[in-house]
Image 1 (cartoon, helix red, strand yellow):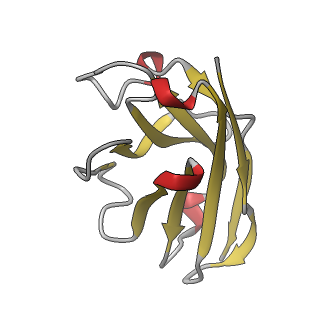
Image 2: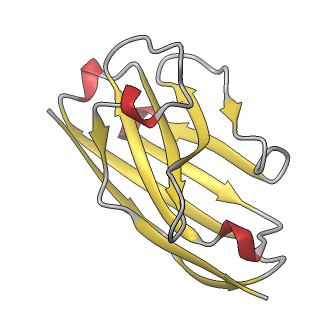
Length: 125
C-alpha cells in the first residue's frame, strides 16, 4: 500500500500562484508514476498532470498546459504541482495519485490505484 498526503491548497486571487505538495509513504518503491487530478463541484474528475517516478516525461491536461508544472523530489518521495496564472475555473479539489504499473491511458482516473484525501484550491475573480 501507498499512502498519499496532499498539502498547499488554499484561497488565491485570479492570476496568482499556489504550490501543492504530496508526500508519499508506505511501499514507495513500487510506484511507477504519480500525478494530479482535480474535481470541481458537479463535474467529473479531470486529469491535470503526470510524471513517471524514475523518468522525466511529463503530461498535462489541456486546460493547464503552460500554466502548471509537475515536479518531484525523488529522494523524499514528494510530488509537487506549481500552479501559476490561476483562473477561477481552476477551483476544485486537487488529488494526488499514484500507480504501481504502466498505465497507457493516463488521463483515466480509474487507472490509478492510490489517491490522497484531496486539498481544496479556490481561485477568486
